[in-house]
Image (cartoon, rainbow, N blue to C red):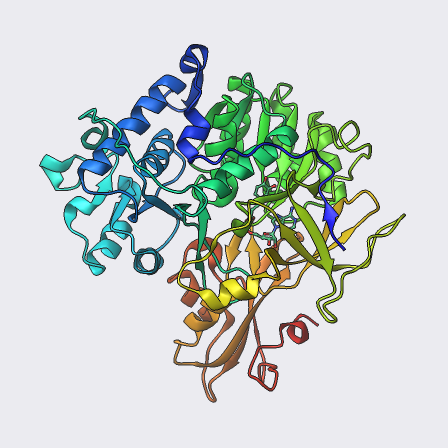
Length: 534
Ligand code: 4UV
């Protein structure tokens, strides 16, 4: 049973990301502020941003980078991120973004898998970027350190080397429907992180699909605290907010006091967040010391937001709280509560705990994972839970070099299986109720259990292990390891935690440990994660 988006279809132009976002920039747009760096107060207008993107594309092309090449970005949110991200796409190359907290080993793995031939970073992350780049055989000039000393002094190009020459953007031709613009990494329903091939048309589609629902306008000031390197920030901030000609207040990391001060000082009107920020906004006493009255809309996504928490934030800050659902493989937004809550657009007021309706030009199915049968959409009340399937122009092209995983994820004529359990009501409003896939989300970031299990198995005192997500006392999902210790070992819980903390990005580390006799497994050797959850 197909559940069609209740929103009218939108036009999706068959064009590249750059042309879609900046192709029709008016003179008035050119003078608008695109990016604000709150610490220094420096601003970048749309006219300046586009000139910088063109120059970056020209410099990359002069270095021989174009269609078929992959360029990695390892950086927190800084204005130059927007320049290099769109410069890479403008040059016809593919951008693969790395979590700024990655260790050298995690960086190396993604460089190898994505076949990136250049990495762009900042001096703060340069040690780990250089270590990884050396291991994969990059030359010095293949590591761009944006705020570094520059090519002449260090052998590594900096921002001035990229932009200073003022080279013109190259003429590139590609098919927007098949040419890969971005390659974020996601573990999908199982296993290790995989490159998610998102075409130019995927990214263009998703901006077009969410535009009428987000209601972002050119006079909106948006706090850009979600990382640009994660698909959520990439699409809603680097793409959708810039398409809306809004102004982005660029924050390199979340700090509650700075977040609040920026909202107050810059009169921020619109915020995209993940649930941990909602917790702080609902509960922290310091909130009352700031004037946050400029905020009119807040969207939460990347992990579940419950009704009480959403209501508490909406009431305390007197704003419209919305929830969206996204997935790297969906470019990422497949569901959103529209800016009017649904009252005017759908005729139904969506609960904050729901993720609203399928975005325009897309459709859903709710499928019983046991029987494979569609769960019927009810005429009143809510349906039984089933796996959420999505079809639309935002569905990825596939996983990089992994046809088997692609075939398991995109099935039967273009349906993408999310691995999330959902219910649907009579209006088509979707509520996410559980996760079928093994993925763990810590503060909205992906923690693939398979990666931690493989790492922990390298410990000489660990005979077997399984990692699942559990809720801690605050209701926050955390990775927990069930460890079978080698006979006679003195391994402690702290040893296990420290072992992972030293080897993976901080958000991925194991945060709880339980020692068990055996890991429950099926006849085929698959870990029975459900049994561990019990
Ligand atoms: O691949 P990923 O890390 O992608 C994301 C993207 C989230 C976005 C993006 C744009 C939005 O506007 C927005 O509202 C949300 O997180 O992880 C995908 C998985 O994260 C879980 C779910 O398990 C996905 O398969 N997830 C994402 N959003 C929600 C969620 C949600 N609202 N409720 C519950 N789980």
